[in-house]
Length: 375
Image (cartoon, rainbow, N blue to C red; front, side):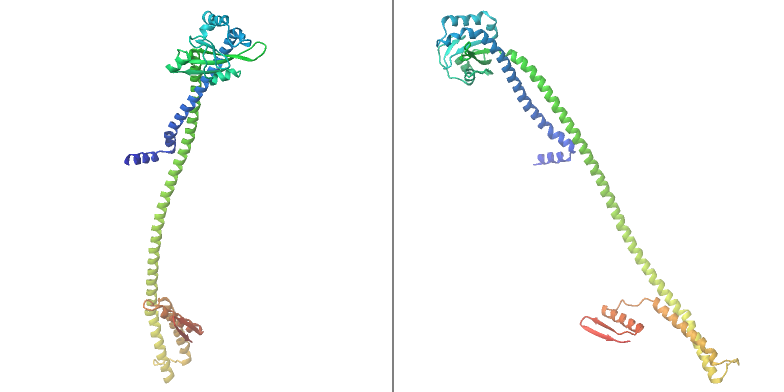
């Protein structure tokens, strides 16, 4: 289990271009071999048919004159058979072909260069059937020992060709000639053509493979570059998010410190106003009130200075107003002590303040209880 998993992990760690190189090469190689083999076979068949067709015309020009007796008879005359035997022994045709048979349309061998074949009936095979229809059939024949003995052909590998023999001036197929050729020429020409086709096909496939690999490599590099950019962006966003979180905490702590400082400042200011000017004004007001009362009772100032109640009244009123203002400012600056109050008590306090300042009547609904207050 570890081996396949390691191979799988190794494969997926490769880049896209490396994966393409690893997978496509064996597939391309197998396809090249299969297609090249098929093309080679087609080339060989083409060369065989071409050489067989040319040789068939050559054989027909030599053999047909000695077979025309079949137009009037069902067998070849002894003179025709002797002529055919002499033709194979003393002419260039005998050097070109390795064996010859003359077939009657019913499957009887009328003449054979191999002894023991003439005068026997054989099954009509596909090539002979095509020749009797007027076509030329050629193929590479590879036969076992028993097949060679049956067909009277000693060579294990030959070009087997069937060609029709026509009656003069009639065009009728009166017989079929079967002859064999040594496949040296076919092997030579087919080998050269196959090598050329293999090289051409291999060069074409290699060019296509390199072009596809270049395209895939370019796309792989683009994907890797984008992945690296994306990783960098994610890292930057992560860092910025951490910095933003830290800044948020710092702002929160700063706001808390500012609120605490502001509360402390307001409390000190309220205490300073109440304990400083407020006390002084209160003392002055008390002195004025005492002086005012003495003047009203005795008709003058204890020091003997003339004074009247009317002259002290504005001063007392001004001091009272200043003292009220200082107390109001101190009360507004000082934060209310609401830590020990519940929500209902806090709402009731807000309602009372509002009613005392505006003189309006407010109904407060708190839970199941309803309170009506008037200022």
